[in-house]
Image 1 (cartoon, rainbow, N blue to C red):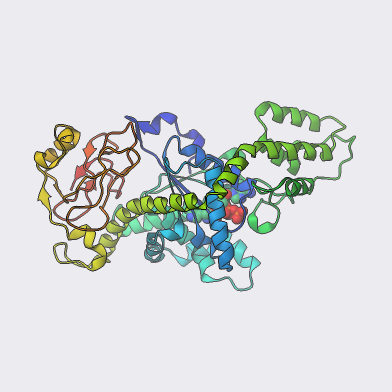
Image 2 (spheres, protein in one colour):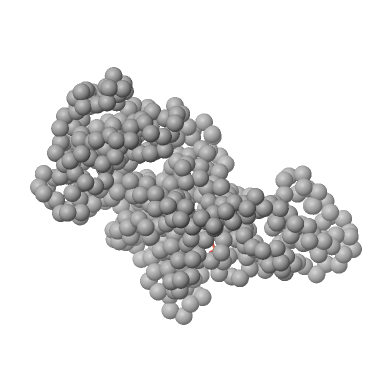
Amino acid sequence: MIQAARLPAGEIRRNGEVTLRVLSGIQPSGRLHIGNYFGMMRSMIGWQERSELFCFIVNLHALTSLTDGKILAANTLEAATDFLALGLDPDRARFWVQGDVPEHCELTWILHNHTSMGLLERSHSFKDKAARRETPHHGLFSYPVLMAADILLYQADLVPVGKDQKQHLEITRDIAGTFNHVYGPVFKLPDAAIDPDLATVPGIDGQKMSKSYNNAIDIFTDKPTLKKRVMAIKTDARAVEDVKDPDACNLFAIARLFLDAEAESELRARYLLPGLKYGEVKQELVETVWDYFAPYRDRREDLASRPGYVRDVLTEGARKAREVASVTMDVVREKTGLKYWPFRAPPPERHIEAVSMPRFRVRRKNLPQSLSSSGIGRAIRRFHATIIPLHIRSWGSAGRSVLRESDSSPGRVPSVGARPLREDSPPWGRCHSGKTVLLGARCHTGKSVLRGDAFPGRVSAGELL
Ligand code: ADP
Ligand code: TRP
């Protein structure tokens, strides 16, 4: 496992291109709390500046603990709204709800067949959850497999999570390794990014803060509730005149999350002198937390008044997530034999967009004038690519996907590497090595378009098969 902090910034962008794919999800099993924020959400939002970020609300996972449909639906929207309010930018990140992308479930089933029972039986989180229930159900047992599918579907490099998720990442790598051993290198093995300083945020009772332990301080709450929760933080029974131990104090562990280095050492110094009153520290903490989230609270109120906007963001996010997920699934289906028709035979309806389009050689004149002499034209000539005739409608329009639907067939363009255009980015995809690749291109054999490290959708060497 590597720590995010150890990644040199220079490795993240090469030739102006983002080369690191970061992914994580959060369960909408209750209101989000400061443990979620400091353990995962804040670092996720930070990653949008320096990675290709995938962020989603894992409502399928929440089914393992929530059986009230209305509550799950409400929590899902709330969690999405929270994330947006806290600064997640849907133009920079892919942001969606897990259940809106059916590939998560499809891949889960496939991965089940490469997951040993023993591996899942050793899962701490299964053992913990099973101990809390009379009869643990199969969803709890299979939880890490769905999580593995979440991650492997998008060929993630790095997964920022709290320490409690470390074993799930190990299980993911294990499953990916087994699958790759059987079928060849299909999945990238992800690393967990765990901030060592913020491994586990304690709850008001001193256990790990969790939505399910009724010990959380919510991020967005009203002030009287915040005050009640903070005042209920458990502290030891030392008298005012005693010296206190900040490192053994729950209150200190929570307070320091909101303090810069200087303020933290001031508070530490107060602990080490007689006279510190826990009640006073708690009063100060209420104000600190309230002020810390104030700008986000305003933004959240605005978002809550525009539910249509949040819905549109999630719909578009699911579409953008599927663009990537479907590339991986094409390869997985082919490798496993689920794709059973010969390439040139008429396919079942579902895959019509992938194989039924007539292929033709791209000639310069088929390209927009502005491109024929550019890198994309050279790439086509060099690789002799046969591509699906793509009618490029939104050429150059900022913020939209480069390639749109085909002229000749309805449906989605199989968009390896399709990226939203930004004002400053050239209107074609680039692979890691810096070579130009053609979005939506397909080769004669119908295999995946690009070869390199051979992770679908993650072009490394930029070579057409
Ligand atoms: P919860 O335990 O409240 O249900 P989740 O299991 O949904 O939280 O966790 C969502 C994310 O937040 C995960 O990455 C998890 O590691 C992180 N997280 C949750 N609680 C804490 C905590 N107390 N301290 C640090 N990170 C946490
Ligand atoms: N199991 C994670 C948690 O409880 C949530 C999760 C589901 C997740 N799928 C994921 C986290 C994929 C990271 C990547 O916190």
